[in-house]
Length: 91
Image (cartoon, rainbow, N blue to C red):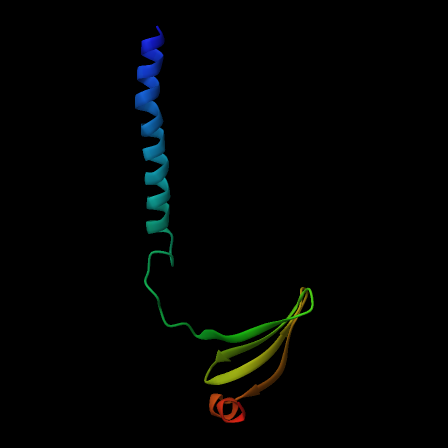
């Protein structure tokens, strides 16, 4: 009786672990956007710095422009925008 339980345990635990691993692997392959390689993005985060506990100041590149954004928990505001050449000349 005890040997039957141990035999089932030896076969079923690796089977369940293999099924879980296979399901996660398949989910990653089928999930759109996760299996693809790196693609060109329209929006790129150039730099970001924290401002206090919940605020953040970020520079985002979009449409050939650098946008300076103020982000807090409840809102995002555009502060200014500039061409990338202008921001590189100022630095």
